[in-house]
Image 1 (cartoon, rainbow, N blue to C red):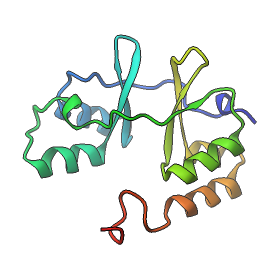
Image 2 (cartoon, rainbow, N blue to C red):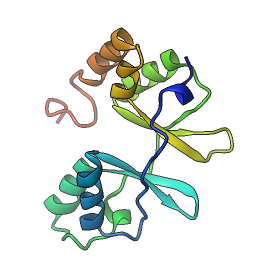
Image 3 (tube, rainbow, N blue to C red):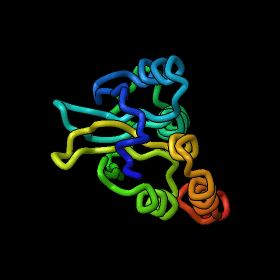
Image 4 (tube, one colour):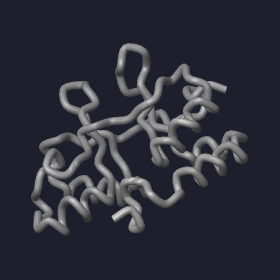
Length: 145
């Protein structure tokens, strides 16, 4: 199955000039922990609830700090025509639970999560990816520091 068949297509976007308060409120309304950041129709980053807390609040930034100050500018992504098995392997290797989905023109067309994959019949593969994502030693591991 291709990623484009199971991704979430209606994706809300953050703007680099928005406040982290606005983005946190968007995440709350959407019940989401991540938003792609777009500037002039280009994907320029990702912002997570963790970015807001760790790069924002923990470093003394207030709720009016701009998204660009705390977002992750290095974006890992997949293409809508990629096979799910390949994307799940990449998610495991990258230790991420969600990836933005681009078309071959590099335009954002959706976002895919482990939950999307599990709901679309890829339970065992999503479980294996989650196991790899949860391995100690990744960039967010408490045991790596």
